[in-house]
Image (cartoon, rainbow, N blue to C red; front, side, top):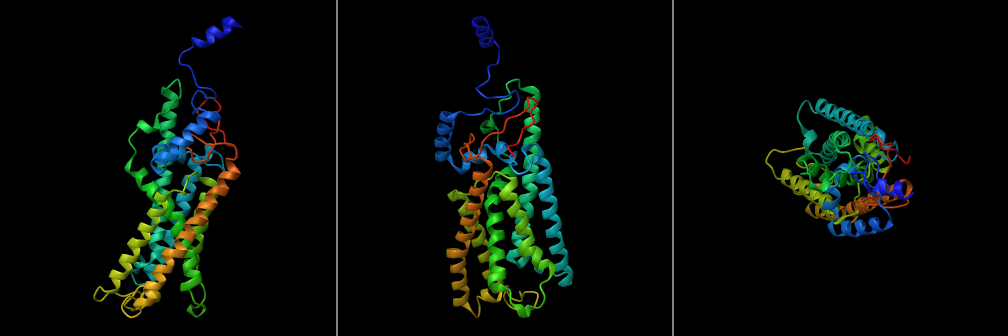
Length: 319
């Protein structure tokens, strides 16, 4: 036994406890506690610095199917939003009123999120495979690698997309839509329901993003503030109308003739509906974590367990 022990100690390079040939270290309880405390101090930036580990997680289908999951979500999202775009461009005789509605701003943000998420996942998978091929220890130093610009954009959109999708779905069906508008059209169902359903499934089962940080809520408010500025400015642009010829975008935000109503609706949206949408989305991700990652925290402190691997760099899922 002593000889075996001595021989084991001289094998370079040594691996940390639980580390496989190509996978990350499985952290013990003390390591998790220390890492979680460090991540608590760094928060949002720390999670983004470890973006490779985050985007390669797919609890519902298994990490080994993560690229397929991301590509499927991106393709479906693009197809749904393309249908909405073409429908509105045909309805409006080619006049691009499509770009004035908050619904379609959110649709475009959702497409950007899905495409960037698929791209980032492919980049991370490629880097993982390169490390597995060239690094005997299988150690990745994610924090030392410059973060691509696309990842910065993805981290800004990871909260905007689900929160804004829930927001527009609630506001459209609860406030804006009226029965006398006529039969519900397919494009309305897609724009104010189907796209959110895809996003809901993505965040509930297919990704590992954390949204419970102040930076995420700030991004959602900045997005809402930018649209309100555009909405108000558009109302006062000479000759600017919506597709019906009205001098406003939405009747409830007619800043010329119904200033108090517009202010009141905006205040209620920012004080009640937006934070409620954010809280509901945060709870969704917490329920996801309690379902898929109940026993520990990963290295960035955001609640995930690491999966193991089979020694060839292919992660095994808990699913």
